[in-house]
Length: 625
Image (tube, rainbow, N blue to C red; front, side, top):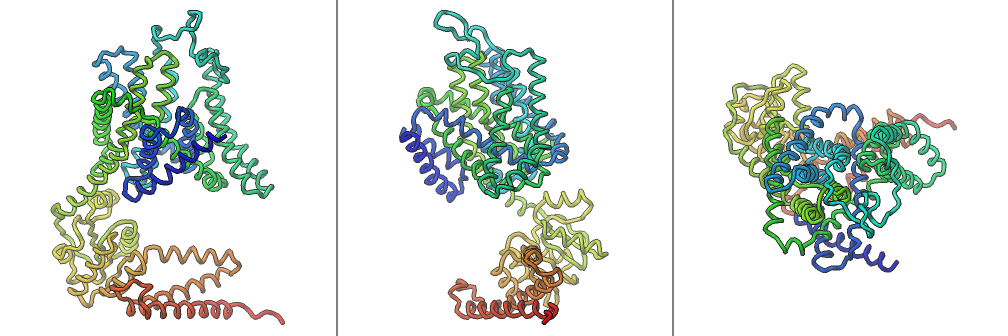
């Protein structure tokens, strides 16, 4: 018991110290976890030989992550991804496997051994890549979605890989027992008892049992989970929801292991089945904390398990193999990105995010040694290559960020489009905000001229029939070419607050009579835009927050009409208050040190409360005496 508490304290302390430091330095949590593992393992030797056993436990973080991913994907969405799953993902696995196999044979490996190595190294790290994409907000980009499709294909491909491995067994690698007998894989590990449901079955029997297990997961998700949740709900105990969520994940994972399938794939399938369930959000909230903790533990065990003794014994070979693997996979991924029309930053994100080996490589390597496919010495070297490539992955994401910034700067400095049209409405910035404005104005019969400095966004607009011009909207010559001298309205919808303020300032100087509508990030940006000369300022989240607040009031007992009136009163009061506070705002002082500003803000809040209560009371019918 003391040993367990000691190990748990070491792992948790390492995570608590290292991860915030890595996050503050902009390196991401994954690199922090890996560094923590290296420090407590190879460097300080604070954790013992149980790291490998702990890693098997921590791999359930990957299982839970795929379950949560499945909850976000409806079956229809999965079907819509079939072309990328089969095309992009399938091509990546096959091409990488073939290239690694060819390289292995060139180094003198037999074809079966080289093929096994190709299978192991064709996979990438689902845990590191998805965690990093989510942290950095890159999941919804073109490169992020393509990377996710490939990772999903790889996870599915683990099943046929596990089925293929025994066929590649090399008899000379068979293990011999104490009496000279040849031990079968199931007899290794001191003749341990196996709980497999498919051991000893013929091929058709294994297939039937496997399909039966998959069908059981699907049917249970459709017909059993909902009644179970309703039954648990009657207990009115919060911890029972958590217990049921863990039971679903662990139970499905155990069932998949019994039939020789990947637990991660089984839970992913269950998540997809439950994606339309009314209990989906409950499952997400219950599983999320365990997923994060176990994933972090998994990354720490990867760092702690790196065999630096072997690395220092032959550093040139092992580091060379690791870098060679990353380079080889990168070239293949870059080529696939070209074929599947990924461009610019999306192509580099796709290439750099998937160039490593993955955690399922540990599983395949262990299985290949058991099945006499790979000799122990080669497997140990490959384990180190896999771990080193995973350790390098956060650095590849940092490289992507550097390239992304340089490409963004290059886009801004490249020649802008020749603007051949002028309109009564100029829209500067065509992101999510500007797109809605543009569609509404054009649909109402008015002409617009759209300017944006993101070439990919302009090209995407053109594919959907909306014309736009590439160029920096803050450049005076572009604004004049777009018709600033005769436009009626300028809409400033830029993502960069400083650029938006500069644009409003310039436009107001050029056209004192121009009506300027500007998008503001926050309250302080509102004051800046008002000072710069904007006529109407729209905060990004203000209207959607008002609508959410109105829904809250309706569910707290107000009628729809009363809630709508409260929303209207709040809107007009807040708009007038902002104008008044803008006069008191001093950009040289923090808001809490501006005495006049703070005093008037408090007075306005009191006025708002009184106005709201008076309005609601006046709208309610008099109660019967």
